[in-house]
Length: 516
Image (cartoon, rainbow, N blue to C red; front, top):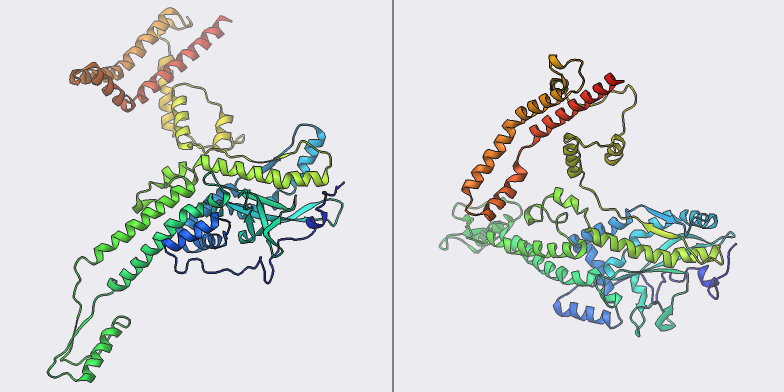
């Protein structure tokens, strides 16, 4: 069933990018943030775009360990994609295509397990994942997708896009064998992949927040504890007494206890305005965090709430953590990578001669505001719009009750009031009994409906007349009408009209039955 890939069979059967004890693929790394300042950061970024990205990739890795806000936002964006349910769609409805799709679908757990690591490309601009094939049987199985350290790769110096594997024998890098690697690129901007990672843009925020945080901690260490001032009598205190006073003042910083002679005194003078200045660093840190939130998630509502003024959680929930257009683009790029670097090789190795391939897909659905939807349903029902119970049950995930099962509902008193209103409107006058829906009965019901709704309409007219008198022009009157319209209470009117329509429907049915 399997077919041999031309010239790469030996490479496919072994791990070619595993770590080594020494050489080009070691797991040890340098401290990229030690002594980091604007000049050094500029050199690191410049060397990366010139073909030596090792220091930049080490910096990007450490940023996820030392810049907590950036790490949290980046993880949120990765999880937004890795949490979407995936499926394999057949190339067509033909039996063979459905069979191939089912064969590929059994490896969905393998893809799911590696999704988060493959999305490391979001921060660094690219990721390289080695496919570990199992060839112990007649088929080729991708048993594991192994993340490889991005420092073990480099880009072709001519085009800046082709990824190569570092090797001691190849200074320019070893070409990656076909059907052996999943190479995912995820650029936050157009241009070279090494310049497209989120870490490159966030590195400046990381640098400045590290300065601000360091200075803030120093400030707290200095002014967070009260100043201890020791006083002694210069005429009577001996050098030993002075040394004891110094020791006592220093010990108060940790022990808050000391023993002194009566001739010595320790004071705690207040430093005016010192503690209020810490808001400078706080404001800078919050500003930088908000910029990183916009860079990574495309919004700040779910990332920065409360004191930073980002917005409420309820409003942020509508954004579903990551802005929907960004999430959709991440999912689309990820699907393209999996289809190109895994699904196609999997089909080619196990189903030779296939030209139409199944598709790995992630279905991104924008979340609905269910609170607004249920408000629309409630108003529609009140106005007499028929709404399917089955649709409502499926839409809101509320199962329909079984026969004889107790259900929740309106209080009985409210139901009785509604029934009384319907009955009162539907009941014919004594003179019309037995006549069905005669013209006189219709006219009587119309008159009664007009009388019952008259107070409501008069209230509206009173409001409109007051606005007309207050307005200086038709344009101003129009604006006042538009502003007042959402505040008009139409509940009683809708209730009365619903009852009237129900009554006339019942009367009409009775007329038909009598005519049979």
